[in-house]
Image (cartoon, rainbow, N blue to C red; front, side, top):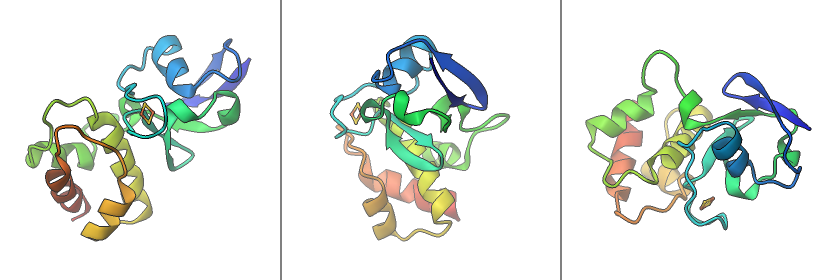
Amino acid sequence: MTRFTVNNQPVQYKMAPDTPLLWALRDASNLTGTKYGCGTGDCGACTVDIDGEAVRSCQRTIGAVEGSYVTTIEGLSRDRSHPVQMAFLDKNVVQCGFCIPGIIMAAAVLLKKNRNPSEDDIRAGITNLCRCGIYPRLVEAILLAAS
Ligand code: FES
């Protein structure tokens, strides 16, 4: 039995400890905002916040997050949209949308650590991949969210 906290709720998974967190979130908790893209740690579609770090959940086992605090896109904000989400709307960042939850999670973590990032900080900090090529707009949006 693996225990940790997801979106401020305690969870217990009866899955093998080497189960990727991504699958526990999607299959056991029905938190399908966290996406499966590559499964190899490259694309970042599965990014969640674990104890304040942006982590690719396909590469982290549930055993490794025992006792941790996990936040998914569903838990990023409660009553109203997160400033990053608002900025993504303002800047029309989204194209197909598949990679967006992971990018928003990575951006939210980046802004928690650095309230005033430069364009270079954003390009270095957001390593998620997007097949639609939204990179220029996402940099603009994160700068807006930081302002
Ligand atoms: Fe995890 Fe691509 S699905 S990095």
